[in-house]
Length: 290
Image 1 (tube, rainbow, N blue to C red):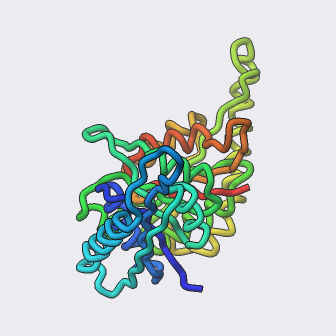
Image 2 (image 1 turned 180 degrees about the vertical axis):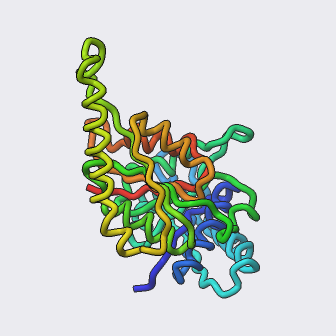
């Protein structure tokens, strides 16, 4: 089976920027780049549905245009195009499961730093069990750069550190030839608040020492496997979502793990992933794990 990086495009500038980022990633991974367009199947009683032949021709033209846009910057990259009919979220999730990586675009805030993931991206995120990268709308020149990118920033959950997220982040830093910044923020349980002033300082020191030790243990196999990757560790008392967003200001890629929790109303992401997706300018890799 061919190794594939898949980019979902939809005719928007965000989708094209995601395809540009995916092309650079596919080149670094020596993978095939697959561009996928999903046109929504509107066939149902009483609902107007466009002519399927017109949809197919339009999708083919869009895919060919995107592929031709990428080839000048990546002349040796193998590019394949594919169009599908059905639910965009379901079809893209399926393509992600058959790929090393799925890359989707996200809508920007304009002048405000950060981006908002679109409804399709969020729906795919709720379904996926494979790594997904969301790329905000940047200029083509900026998105195509790979050598001058910032460090890889990883939000580390302790004590149950995700080996999938660690593996993804260290492999990315190795490919990009950049450093790693590991961020973990902790807080005391609410019970240790007002009226516990005598025990709080001691408990804070003990908790800090414990979390630093847990970080050392979690990182040991990876720093040994990637001895040439510079690693900076930031283990502090604070707010995980806020601290990770601040640490990601100059990042080239932000990596977060996503532990799937099936709620009564469906799958959802936690506050840290949600905050990073909405307030980080860099591409965000979400790595699902159990």
